[in-house]
Length: 340
Image (cartoon, rainbow, N blue to C red; front, side, top):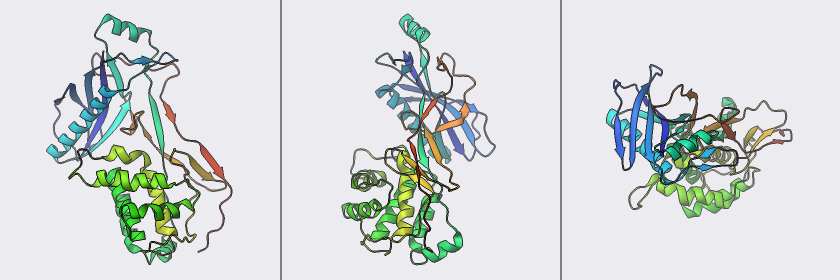
């Protein structure tokens, strides 16, 4: 049995090449075909094929679940090829998962029997909270006049097209606000954020500062390093923490943790597990970015494939569609008045 991991690669600005590329990455064979797309970008369907060492597992619903090292290697090959193409053509690249993003190629009679008896392939997405926080510009001028350096950093983060760049900028904001870096920043930042009702813990902050920041920023001595997919699942929660620090820290450029109450969001993230809240009586809009089941690529909800590459098997489970897992949303009491 072979696994085919499918992905959509969007290149901006558009490229002239129309032919399909072939790419070999260890045991992965990757091929491409051009898709129709907007005039401002070029979109390609990538199919990364690799042999499976074990047969897919059938769950209690009769659905096949495909995971393991071969799938991870196929996804790595997709990223490597996307990066090579971006550098070769000097284009911005965006990789997403179409629907479906997994398929199988039977090679033996046993393979075909398994697929015939199956009710489909498990396709699960994960909704990661994303909240666009807004302020009144005239009020913001008064609140932020003593910390325009912080405003500049958050502006750079918001303007970053990749979660990795956004994360690095927001860590710089925390360092700037507390005049501390590295392990010394963990406890003051955790103490400050812990005073808000958003579920921030010292372990979570330590993970950002000590486990993620260095391999996301530096690549000199480590054997491995991190990329966008490694921070995408919690980028929105870090942005919420940045607004908390920028607006509610009493003394800017100071390691102290006193707070002022300038900003209370109408909705947002309430835990590192994906829980969200919405405030009663507010005209708030909960936002989510939907990632595939492995939390590797965002799902292109408009990228439903009308046909699959030749020989690729996929069956939609009974009931149709994909299931999107999201954390619970809690309703808070009415928002108190915030002093101006």
